[in-house]
Length: 153
Image (cartoon, rainbow, N blue to C red; front, top):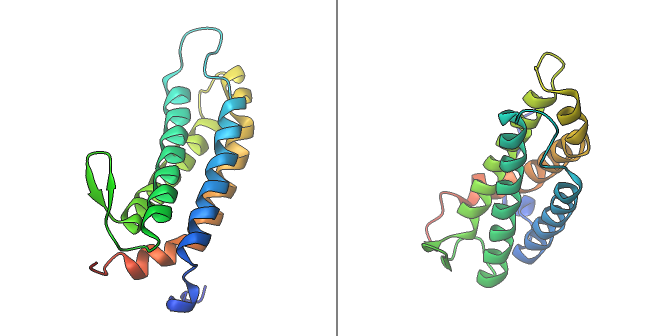
């Protein structure tokens, strides 16, 4: 695979990035609404962890979108609960959490996992949709984090 070249032309406008984040967060929130959180039988902790990781990722994507909308730029600090942060840092955190959620769901749904059948079926739609969202956002927005993450405001 050829190395990816990152420059100013590969960075989307902040408003476009915020719209993209909101769109994916809304889609994931919709999928999460359709994903059952309670199953018959004894609680299976990996199911809850996988769903919780996805919920946290959605929250972080929404927070990054809101910060981008407020700031209008990637590197200007904005007030967030608990202090100040730059939208690019919130975006990087959201992408990392989205990847963690993808890995948790992948492990949960893998054929060798001892996941109960009902839990596996309940998370099927989420496990199909989340990796696509993670891959799309990673491809489109990771260059922003790589290029602007080191920029001082």
